[in-house]
Amino acid sequence: MESQTNSFVSKWLLRKLMGYGIGDIGLVVSSAGLSIWTEWISFPNACCLSVVRASDQQVIDNDIANSTSCIVFVVSESISWEMQKERFNSLLACIPDESNLPLLIFSGDTYNEGYEYASKYIINRLGLNGLNRGKIGSSLVIFLVENYTEDHANGFFDDDKLREGLKWLVSSLPVQPDVTLVKTHELLLEYLNPQLELLNTHVAPGAGPGDCISVFNNAVNQLAEEILAAANANCSQWPAPEIDLLERTSNERIYAEMFLPSIGWSSPSRIQPLLAAINSCKIPEFSYDLSWLNHGSHMGKQIQDQKKLLEECLARYLTESARLLDESQVVTEVNVMVQNCVGLELQDSSYYLAPRWVAIFRRIYNWRLAKLSTGKLSEAYVLTQHLYQAPAAAGSNGTTQGLTANTASSDAVDHIMMPAVSTGITLDEIIEISCDLNVVDAQPVTLPPRLPVHVHEEPQALADTNGVLGVDEMYIPRRVELGEVMPISDDKLSRLRVELGEAMPIKTDDKLSRLLEQCTKLQDRIDETLSIYF
Image 1 (cartoon, helix red, strand yellow):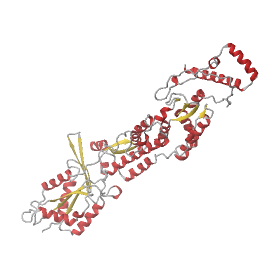
Image 2 (cartoon, rainbow, N blue to C red):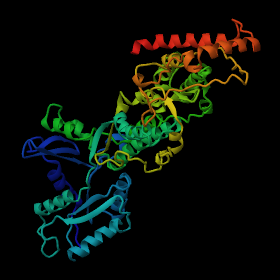
Image 3 (cartoon, rainbow, N blue to C red):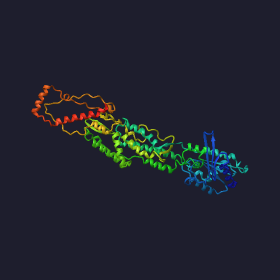
Image 4 (spheres, helix red, strand yellow):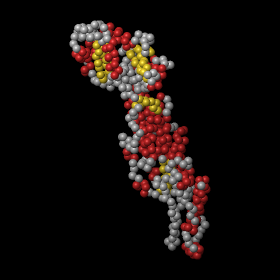
């Protein structure tokens, strides 16, 4: 084997790859150890940028391999192989795992043996055979001397050999990730809204706070995974930070800003704070006991107490558990939630508060996502081919698989739900219309056995299949006249009064009279309140 001095091949390669100065065609940036070449293909449809950087040119965070897409390494028999191997390993240590970069090795030496033997000899000397393929995906050795064998070498470096190596290098470049800039809160809502629609349907009639919290936190996880997957796909930290050296008014710079991701979009300094902010949007468990909602309120007499209890639970959740609002904000917000997002159900003679939890938690989501609506945290790059598509009826991790409920038992209960969707009527107005909050808790009077009372009920129209009535369809009790309650003739009524007088003297202040008077007043008040709707 015969060797040439390494300085000749190094200087020749630097001239070829770095250029001679700005006068070179296509060279837009030229400095010591750095050049940026540009080529327009079918101008102005495509712009190709090539950044050539010497290994001693350190960039962001003192990392010489930042944004590197390929490696060109020069070897020489005139330098100790131990020194060259150490330098090569030092370079590899700066390359992130799973980069799969192509390695092009240039040699200016001549050999007696053939190409296969000579190339394997160089690869073994550098220790490439024992390398993990994660950093170096492929390698090629190019001998720059014309007729590189000892017998035929003429001492000149061959441009065609250089072109051959560069063409192979371009064809072996790793594919850069296809990413898209998105609004973080908008992408999260894309995952969340279909799940909320499911909770709003008859498929999950019993959806409560736990379901609303689960689907939201699941959407937060999906957003974080999308951002992390895009960052992990960009091990080389592409695009190169040297693009900032292009003149701001140049066509190359304009195209770079239009079609390339922002520099450092996948760097740990950018991704880690973003993921921390996204994960902080998760909402905690709703640990407050709501079993009292199932107890109901007879004739609505305890409904105000239950409303206050619900307001207290929501206020404590927003201030203590979720830490979303302060004391000055929570009063107004809770009042809006309860007045606009809570309905009233009537089952038999008992009223029940019916919170629409999806509507309530939508307001909580809005407060939580406010931090992702503005500033640097409002945007992120994700893979154009998303990891998650619009969720179906059941999430991949089983989050919503348990939402399907057996509605047979609920359908068997004949009840009237005061409007379950917003009709512009507040909860207090519904309570005022439906419940007599001033009624005296009077005990029913037991009449003598010989005075049976037959009550004739008027058949009512069946409610719709969902059991939900709008304002115009709400059941309004009709005033019941005394003649309808006790249909007896005048003669019988006279005898009845005589018998009643003997058995129980009539007093103007007895309980029955007072109860009848209260019923009349209540009916008058209901008629007056509902008159505005007819």
